[in-house]
Image (cartoon, rainbow, N blue to C red; front, side):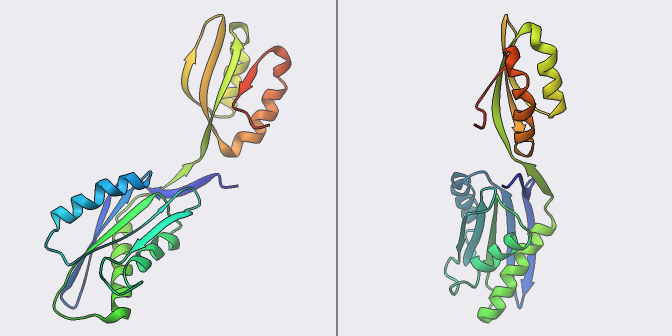
Length: 203
């Protein structure tokens, strides 16, 4: 079970030069593939005179969704080494684009692999890597008289309250850290005989 993953906090840029060629690298935090469709066209428009716009991305807590694109470079000489840097640093929900300006000297497949790898690494060196804890939403239903017990449980398991209704019958929607899930449900099961109900729970 994966309880957290690593990504980057905000966009970052890098630069690598080799035999006259310039490799501009851009790293972006992303949430889905739709984000990529917004980013790539803007970069291609801004750097319209570049020969190649190669990229790779990984998505999901276990980085099971991924893609590497060579954009005209020899197969696996650009996108694959970029993706390799994401995997080497155990990052996901990240897109890296490397824009190449050809300098007149061919680098060969081996040279290209090294250049795109280094360019991707340069962008990641400038990035702030953060750990994101996975959460799930739970709903707690209780009476006003049971408020103290519920709030104690929320504090004990560090739930983040998303919304709340305080009436005769109260309800709190909160985010629960997945690593706390089993312990939280076990704790709350002891309160259910008092009428406190947990919805969206693991059965």
